[in-house]
Image (cartoon, rainbow, N blue to C red):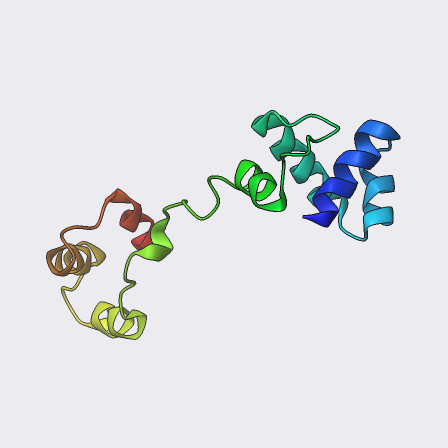
Length: 116
């Protein structure tokens, strides 16, 4: 959280740009940009109050981190088995998809991306 405080201080006290802050803090300009964006979304202003501890600052900036649900959270098919099955006559990707959904009925439409 020390870097977050430094990024905010350089931006609001000295008015430095992303690249200048990145060089001074020792991080990438994209990290500086993302930190400033998160601070703006969280409604943080400089100077931070005395009541803003590192835990409070982290909770404000990274509240929704780790909540993304994507297709990687679904069990993937055995790709070697899929490849072998597709070599057989009269086996289509649709048939394999139906079998997969039969084994994993609770999966959502994001699994469709696996077979596309």
